[in-house]
Length: 182
Image 1 (cartoon, rainbow, N blue to C red):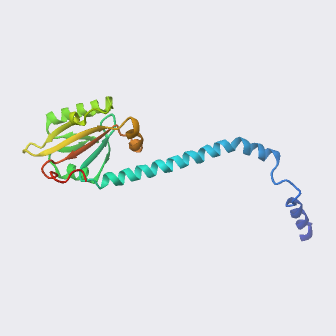
Image 2 (image 1 turned 180 degrees about the vertical axis):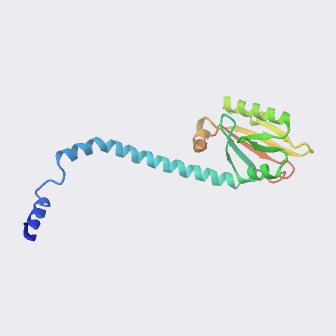
Image 3 (image 1 turned 90 degrees about the horizontal axis):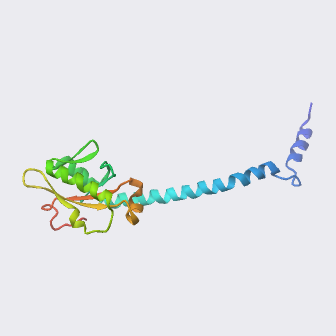
């Protein structure tokens, strides 16, 4: 049977400063793994930055008085700010059906669908007035929708976390007359 003194001598031999802390096998494994660990850390940092950008964009959109809908290429709504949620809940001209914008007016529905498809297809810096359309509610009121393609260039980088291809800004022209977007 080993005594306490025997165990201390065994322990001290393991922790002797003259003995290498890592064997060649561990060093070899570390050399193999270190590039992958560095890459994982770089990706983690990039995701953190992207998350911060996404959160800042969301906070900015959330304080706008104008309704903002971000839609994917297939016309699914991927984000709505609080003003957009209010328009959908209280308005009579726009709804969300199957996670897509659904104007009550059939002509506006067709025009919005065509405009989203067009804005998704050609993302250039044309005059955005061509991409504005009326979304009436049937009672002489309604909204003006302005579409902004966001799937290319710097806009794409900004809205990338949302996977959006078109931003739709929607305002009531009578209620928002002197207020603007903010």
